[in-house]
Length: 329
Image (cartoon, rainbow, N blue to C red; front, side, top):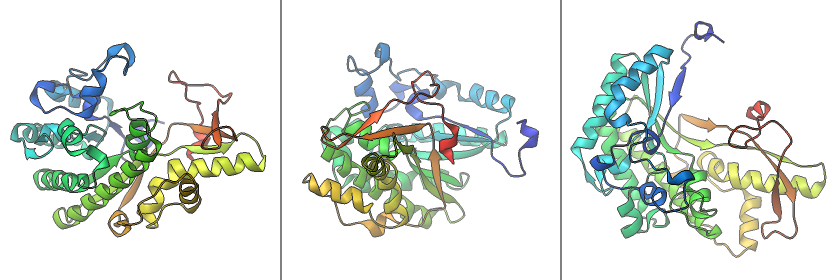
């Protein structure tokens, strides 16, 4: 499809994350991803984001490229440790970077879409305040959100609280593939709850601050399919769907966690928080979908969670993900 064929008002954009592109590590506090990526064996080739694409210093060139390829929207994330020293005290130099970035985007008729959190939790809040496992993290996040709404809300009208909270909680605290690298199934659900509470608190302060804007959340959404028509495979796939999708959608939309997943966790003696749904289920203006692929699930009575992932036979991307556009529907 040519850009000229897009319908009126369609936003054709590109997206990034602060740690993935900015660099400029010497100009900010450290995040959990700085420590994680500098730990031997945690990243491919020991790569890290110290320099990355050097967007912090070359943002004007990057915006020229955006303009050249014809995008009219740019979704980027703010580095919490850049705008607040240790995640607590405002850093005017860091804030000024995003002021200049936003102004340059608007000069080029590119609409900014800001994500407040794309995984780079300030290291101080993790080390000294127990990070996402501490219920107080929602208050720290609300303070951070309020600062950014006040500094940029006059020009930026589209905001995303969290990017892919499933990754932050599940990959960060259960599988250990992402920072901070924990491997604790129970922790991942406490982290998920505190992420959702943080989202809700940010929405509350947004409504008070940016009267003419829109705010939502974005999650990785996978199409979960049973490997066969066997009833046990179907039930296993349904449970995985609740863990991966419903656990992050239902509390926001319906004010509760999906029931079968709750029962499953209770059977494993995992106590799930039962409060704060009035905060979590604040009205949002959109629900962002990051779709990559499907997951094939089979029942496995030998696994502690009673299911396993099965490799599909479709063509795969370089990352090994099946190419399955149908799943987006």
